[in-house]
Length: 395
Image (cartoon, rainbow, N blue to C red; front, side, top):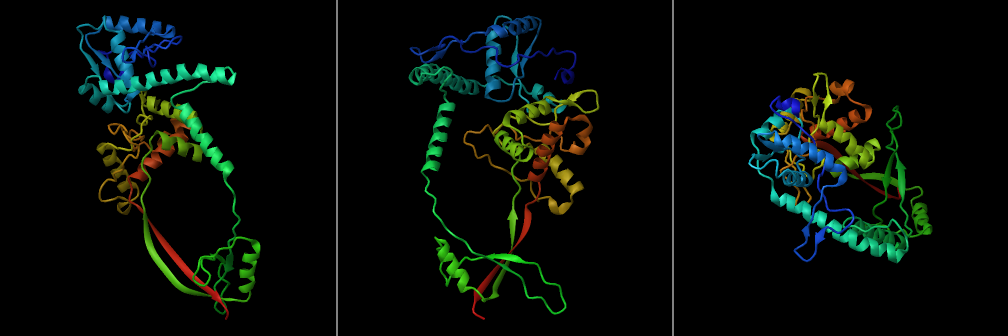
């Protein structure tokens, strides 16, 4: 970031949160509207000391923490911790979703105030974590007689859901049922090779759904069909459109990386963090390759859509380009729609061009993100679907 801003700026990192609730006591005033009491942890005192020294020398301060609730809270804590040093100095909050010259320049050209609603949202979650954890964890350890047990705002609810699902699985009573399939082949014309065998599934018996609960029922039908003639009664052909999947957000990226690459969630986020923070791709400067990877939004900037449409037109042709850019709706309630989906910062940087500069895991994850984003901006797939109904009975 400092290289993009130039010599007039000094960039320092807070390395995450610099204030938190105390570790050895509740830190929340239960008698006065749950007021939190923040402290600077011992391991962060040197960081704060350095930041205070830098702030004394500054004419303006820009807080460029992550573009989410946690980042907003970190900016708020920084302002509070540097209050004496920045008194009378303009303090700005800047937010960018990709570490590129264009994004950072745009953010610093349009600074804003700290969003107190986001800060309050993060504080509420942090206070609830503390209230649940510090109240229930000692009780849990005492009742269970085991050290190391803990309860939490999220983990306890998740554990209950898992237990309820496991009880449903254990209570499930399996019911036997049978299906019947026939391997068929069209009668070959004289002098032609036999056509390929295909499989047809029994779906109706004299107009009724089959109810084959035991092997004897199924065998009776098979015996009845012995020597039967199979005739095509109807053939239905139709086109079906399949829309491309939305670009990645955090949860879908983790799921797809697990399914296709075998990555655990932690591994996925670690590799994504490296791609977001930037890689040297031959120009002597680190460039962020993907947008911010902690997001619950599938929104895409118009400029990114325009760039993707140009690539699709040039590389794949007009028929793969939809008349209008696709719009995707975030399913999660209260998603931060101001954020973007996870996408390449420049879609023209395809995986092949970046192969010499990325580690194996980085290239594999970048390829997954690049392909998903490009596909999300393409026209729906057109599938030809053919259904064949076959009747069976005496010749």
